[in-house]
Length: 615
Image (tube, rainbow, N blue to C red; front, side):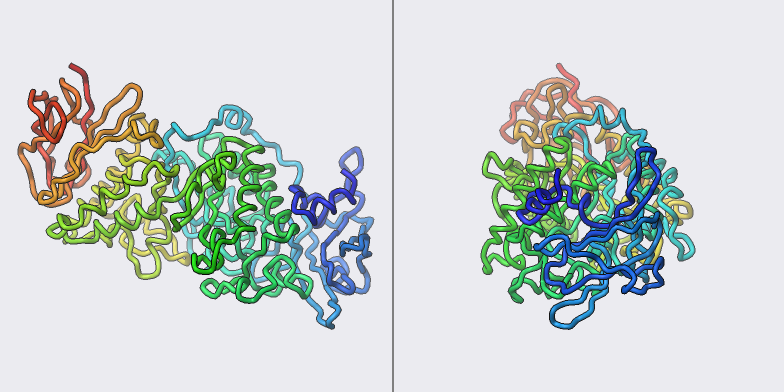
């Protein structure tokens, strides 16, 4: 592609490989030897642009970029191999300002608190995940269990971060042992402040140097793929950091952001909202996500704060952000053309329709959406004292009203275990014993309810502490405390069950895969439902109170034998060991509009799972 053609596409929002034109590039001869380094930057409102670097002792007059396009593109080619050189652009504006900017298209950056870009050879990593990529399929009818994690605090030791490739073996063993299918990393692109968790980025093409080099991250993802674990990256699409070295006000004007202050200023997060009416903004972001798919082989993205993209400032009263909505459609179409197996999920708290429908069907084009309604209702229900739950059954039943409107992921995410909200187990009512029983019940409900699953790190072993990005997880709990060890064993047994019974995932997005058996026993706060696949029928029973039932009558659709395959009250999980040891035979009378019924032993605050064995 000729440069002029690519510039036109960039300005129109149709350049999906802007990183190949802009940024710092090492030029190589036919033998692969580096003979020069080229720097190219877009700054249409700049009077002049100079390169300051460790190579020229930060004396910009030595390397002034040439304006190669009337549209405002500046470039310089230095006949030297400048790999690993730290650099910035010194931008002189027409208003007399001098700005010192990191390269928006840099592939690597200095480790914070320093913030220069670094010339880096992004090419040359030898991937070994060919078999994984070849066999990868869309996940709609597959088990999806996502481990959401913050890379630093999962592995931080003695205040020091470990490298990407130093963590990989421990991480793979842990993910495999806990039966996770995917890992979702909080943003791993460059960001200046640890406490932002990566959500206020400054280098969207630059894997954060906190944990090593970009090729170290490639190695991590490569090894995860070889272990058959998918990798999802959290991504902020709609707003950018205001730090002076970043993309904001790049050439002294709001180049990528809204010009209008009201629409631009995101007061809640202290960031600037991007304007997707601008072609350059669309080209920049599409190129960044394309870059991560091609260069890092990521399997998907979770897009943060989609409500702020659908509505201006996330407020329906400000009207629809039609340019951002149209851009999401363009982006999703492009990404699925790159890889039709991607998970492209929206963290969206609105009721905007067809978020996960195809663009050709009038949808936004995501293929998954976080079910925030399910998450809020479920946690509100479980926070209540069991004696009061009978008045709030709708918090459990309402999710099924809209369960098939979208393709949903059921999240218990990092947002729910920070800012004084309490960890999952600390949300549970009652004494120490009852908290663990409720926690087991909560996760049993999540794993058996229609939708893919996500849980944030630490909740799989019932950590009492809120998440703190400045500390490592409370790993000592599963070593020193029997109750937490049993809780962790419960989680692993539950996720093993989930992955190995297709009734729990095959028809996640099909109403034929679910049927209520009991949803109106308000006084007992007991619920029961069927999960089905083409070859399996499971009955799930949730007892939301401490009441124990020696023989609870539950209507079922099929005549014959039902065998208990899982019970959260087993002593090995920390329970009282009340379970159904023998297969249960149906009685030929109707119950709850079903032609047959079972008499089931139901323990307090428990999830019981029965499998239909046939006549």
